[in-house]
Every structure is written in structure tokens, then in C-alpha cells.
Amino acid sequence: MTERPTLETARLILRPFTLADAPAVQRLASDREIAATTMSIAHPYPADGAERWINTHQERFEHGENVFFAITRRADGALLGSIGLGPRPAHQRAEMGYWLGREYWNQGYTSEAAAAVLGYGFTTLGLHRIFAEHMTHNPASGRIMQKIGMTYEGTLRQHMQKWGAFVDVAVYGILREEWAAQSAV
Image (cartoon, rainbow, N blue to C red):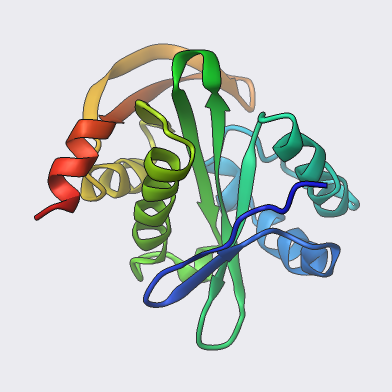
């Protein structure tokens, strides 16, 4: 079994999820506002959804499909949300995705976590490109992408369906050399 990574920032520890995190994930992900701003979280969130999801992490990591990090606050260990990468090694790229519990919004936690994950993707995984998408009705997510140096690349009109309605999705990306240039500053 390959050990999943842990990353540290000034205020956060990004670590592998454990089954002990399931109650906190269940509570946070059950918030309708979280589901409304993400592409993959259902509402209502299934009663065993957190445990089932966490149980997929090790296998998905070992197969190179995903690496998920629990976003935890260094000061008290509180679980704030999730961030991860979905690598596609054949193209040396990955998609970044994240969500944060509503009570932790607007405190800079996601930007801090996302910057660390960019570093992991470019230095440890050797990626050439990392991209992320957000539904256009969630501009706060786009501001996070801009804050970590990603460039707006376009909007995919009615690209996905959420709760029976087609929604537009904005795409942002960053190349390794762009990340390296901004990291050197």
C-alpha cells in the first residue's frame, strides 16, 4: 500500500482522509449550499456517503486516478473541507477540485490549500498543466483560481446539468512555467 501524501501550510495541514473524518464530512457535505456550488456532491447527501467516498481514496490514489486531501486547520485539527487532483499522466495534466464547509468560507483557507496543491502537482507529480472549473453562478470559486495564479481560459456554455438545469462552467488553468515564475517572486 502506497502512503498518501500530507502537505503543510502556515495555517493548514492537508492530509489523507480517514474513516474518523466521516461524521465531519457528512455534516459539511450535507449542506445544500455546498452541493449547489459543486459538480459532484449530491443533495440530499446519502447517509453513508462520506464513509463510502473515503473508502475509495486509497485505491484511487494507488491507480493514479485521484489524490484527495482533507483540509484541516493546524491550530485545532478541525476538518474544513476537501481538495484534490485528478491526474491524467498521459497528458501530464490534472484537474483540481475543492469544497469547503460554509462556516469556513471567506477566510482564505481554500486559496492557501490550493496553492499548496499546485506546488505538489508541479513538483511531486511532475505535471505540466493544472486546470479547474467552476459553475459560473459560483464566482467565489473563480476568484480562488485567479488568486493562485490560474488564467481564465473560457466558458463552456451549458456544459453540465445540475438539479435539472444546464449550467455554464468557467475553466481556468496554469502551466508549470507560469507557476514557477510566480513562485519565484
